[in-house]
Image (cartoon, rainbow, N blue to C red; front, side):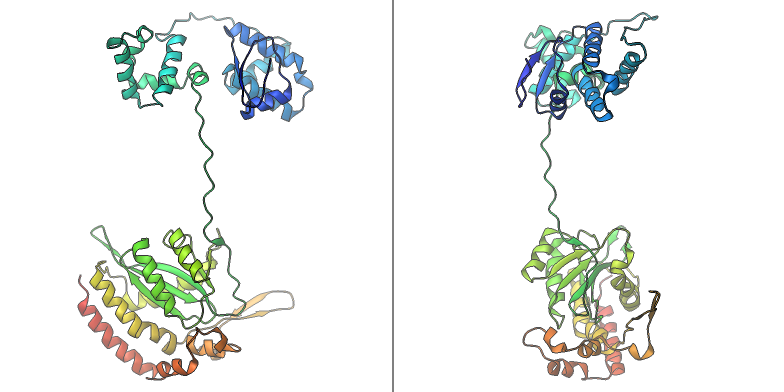
Length: 419
């Protein structure tokens, strides 16, 4: 009798299951032990199943279920089942092949393999050498006569026996379904709708030397205004990234709405996601085969950071990091946003839909000017901040005066760097 629903029953070879019962067995919702004494009995059972279900007239999905069922209950490979079914379709019979070569009995009999599978299951599949030691002790120390041949089993051949059908029918392993990973960040291109606060973020490595990593620069740029903030860290682990991102986000004068990065683990992780969630900032990441998703910040990596600090290796010491960050906060970041003009793209669309991108001369302006030019720009500023306060910093020096002072401080900074 066949019982489904996860119960294990014994089925004699005269029982022919229905297609639904076969599908249940293949899916694992029911378990049946089929006992065939030899190949002759197995071949006979396969033929009876094919005849009972009129195999030739079945549709492909049903044939596939039947084939998988026969593979599962007999332990035969797909190629062997296909050969036997092909023989039945051609001749209407499944016969034993005439052996022209003598067969030799293996050193390890089926009962030895079954005993190996039983002991393997009890010990939860130890390594080959460890299991060989157990088999040897079973016979020599504890007198287990079923291991009389297994006591001499080598580790390499033990792995061979584990691959046999006899072993795998006796010792089947089931693993739990792995939970789906938590999705961090939405894979999309942000739509800023002309509002500031949509950041593009990337990391820049400051060279290797003698297999030692240098410092890392974290470059954050607003997509609309091109307001840019740069910080440096000793490494891109959470230990350094979380404090650095907090300080960097505080340097933006407007409210941050979106944080977009590539798929690097320094940004796409639970700690960064929690930080942005507390700030009500949406986290997005670049799409596959869309290299332009983070193109703005990647162009700035070369034209801004590499131009300022070059490619020289800077050792990742806390003193070096503090010296560079101090120069960044006091001089370089204000220079980028108040005194260095950026080009802003204008897109023309022809009547036929063709897009033409241009950077008009009169469109070059400072990121601070771009921010002020937005419609009702004050609504985007952080609470307690006004353009009157920002004007004090923006017009304290001319662009050239600020650049000269910045370069003097940069030279002092380089002298403090420990190479």
